[in-house]
Length: 310
Image 1 (tube, rainbow, N blue to C red):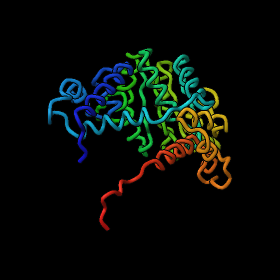
Image 2 (cartoon, rainbow, N blue to C red; image 1 turned 45 degrees about the vertical axis):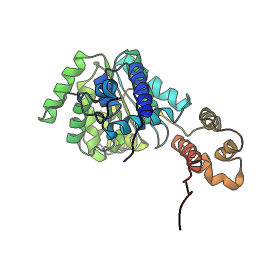
Image 3 (cartoon, one colour; image 1 turned 90 degrees about the vertical axis):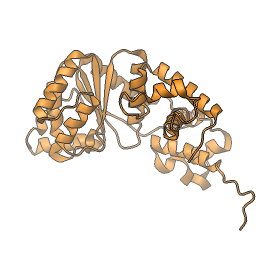
Image 4 (cartoon, one colour; image 1 turned 135 degrees about the horizontal axis):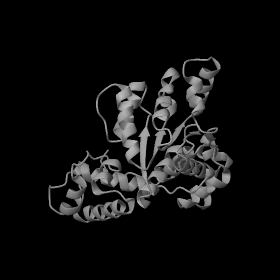
């Protein structure tokens, strides 16, 4: 099991305190939403006060903090066209209290931009952002239950009663609801969002994001006059915002922001034709760009083969 020195613990403690203070979240909220600690467990407070006392803070806690810091310090994004589209859609949905959609294939930077938007709003304390990731959701019942948990108001009951409970929460709070990966709701299950849009009408903005399947599924259902598909689609305000693949300028800006220059930049940009498979052109997405950065980092990691007997 990994061990942390006193100096490493102090550095991690100081960094996580700075991140928590900059986030605009309370210690408990930061620990739960950012670090994944159980609600109101006091772990972060324990780290802050008892970081230097042997055995009082577990190794797993230090590892979780180290992982979070590495994730947030290890990659630097830039403001791309897709990034602006995501932020503008969130701002418009919030201001107009309308449901809007953002559509893009996997790897187009939806979730990254949404995470940064949520962090920005939390830091400025403008309003509450409820973020619900529906990636693992497959049924309407799971969708409503998961949404309630995102609202921190989960109670067992019928879906109708649960939606009314969330409606009451929305009425009390100045907020924006973001539902990511809604395209995971296949077939008829997607029409559950009609009930959500109806319940929250004129109360808060809603942003749905997903792959083109989300809109194509609604369009196919509406064309076939399937129950509630047309009504669900028509409740979305305006046409969905569609994300696009990264341009060469955007890719280069991201690489440079992450310290990649010279020969390495030529490789990841695809200028070295012999190594084109190692460039972002092999997977022309923002996730592909990040994979290239991770690949270069990987090349710098080497084992220590000293004093090995074979």
